[in-house]
Image (tube, rainbow over all chains, first blue to last red; front, side, top):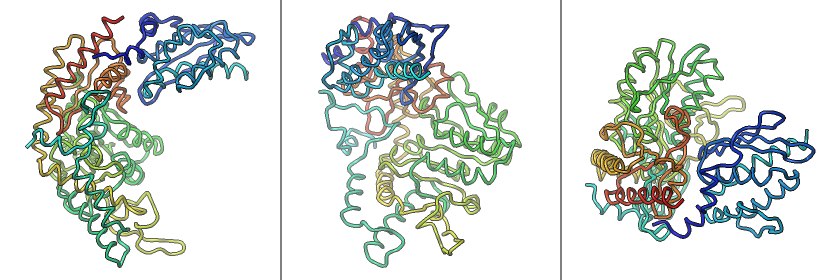
Length: 146
Length: 409
């Protein structure tokens, strides 16, 4: 029964991030905490970011949700760690374009994130994939203001 | 009689989804509509549409007759004493909000209690939370038994002389549990409280008799019982409704309007401000005719059978956990479950790729999810158009889902 379409959604690298998430946990000191949920389905994420001198020094997440939401959170933390805020936000914009099925900037190496491209074919699941990115955007924007 | 012919009345079920014949297992969210209801809406708009209760003209009279005719069908359907007791509103949520804002505000005071249970839908929680906050009242929850049922002992322990309102779901949208609302109403009355019944999941599936239940209010929605969206009913005992103030003011609900003061129409219209949901009511009337023709007792029997068959087949899948009462006679056609470590969203997506539509998430019952110690579940809900072959497709789909997530990675 599982179709090619499903294989596009559940790529091996996604399941790997789901089953062995990177950067799972919380940063204790000098961090900003963002909690976000997806009220229609109950996915929940708690993201902690350590931002210093305009750079995301560390990022960790905790939460509960489906494979797509948790894998996306894992990939996101991996991608933004060590990046300047501007780059992190740019990545988030690229990711958003990718989810909407738009042409996206491929000048930056997206690494594992590229595997999530198949989600754009499943409209009901896009919100799962973007949850962690929205949390990250909120977190760095708060840091920029303060 | 429930047979395969019934399915043929539902045009939507004839399609394929993702290359597979559609198996619709989300009727607890909303039911599909038979051609009889679709035709009734079409006929109303093509032949009889006009505003009600104001025309001298023929169309106005016809529309009024259809609208009020639908009200009489509703009255019979729930065995209310009079059509004064059946108010057309948008749905169950609106009905419960009306009770809270009208009856609640007038009768609940600081320190009074409102009693609900852990298995309520958000629409039977939040209106009471808001009322309790506003009035300084206490919102109490009846604990559930381990199997997801409600015991009268727990209800007796929660309801006291300070209790003004007891509100409970008749059939749980998550556990499928059929609750002893008649007995609970008696306990409420012994303590001087009124009994509100959320009948959203009951009206589509069981014969409702509000006089026999002796509840004070009963709320339900048309769209879950083969009717259109946007129409629902609030039943209330006349003696209570008579003393309640409307919460929506404007056209249709007034008797005499002065510059600084106005008076209201009699029941039930004083609660139906604005142009009413005429087509919706007509559609609901057609849905009631349709359900009556099949027979609510037949439907209830069919649902117990579907639940029993589904539970039997699903429990052969290793790692699948079913929530709620183990006895299918104690539940309507709702089976909520989780499959191993596979998140319900993932279950629902994989099933959808095989044309099987189930619900995944918290089902608008977050306190219940907390009680179950899960964040989300998957739910298959059955109605009169479902058959054992639909269950077989579901079970097959679940087996493949399990394999897909365990073997492929």
